[in-house]
Length: 119
Image 1: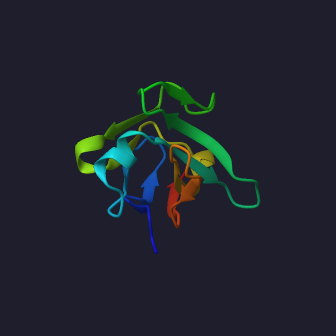
Image 2: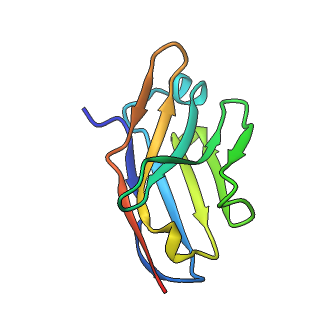
């Protein structure tokens, strides 16, 4: 059963913006709000890497490569987490995955969504 659903990916020119959304339709509010959430990505031919995380207490962590360009946020009432990506670069091209770490209940991944940044 799909726990996390990503949307908002696509093709954009360098310098452009995209906003990714991850929703957790099967989560109840208390589970989602107590979870740490985040985004990872897997560039072509490379390992999956952290992009940004936001804890249940809204502590935020970014990869150095996206600091100042990407913003992660969450909306607990709607069980969503967002990744606003500005000033996109070709090296941001990757499959982006939503990630959830539930309190005492393991981690979950979305199916991934493609982001392609053309030069």
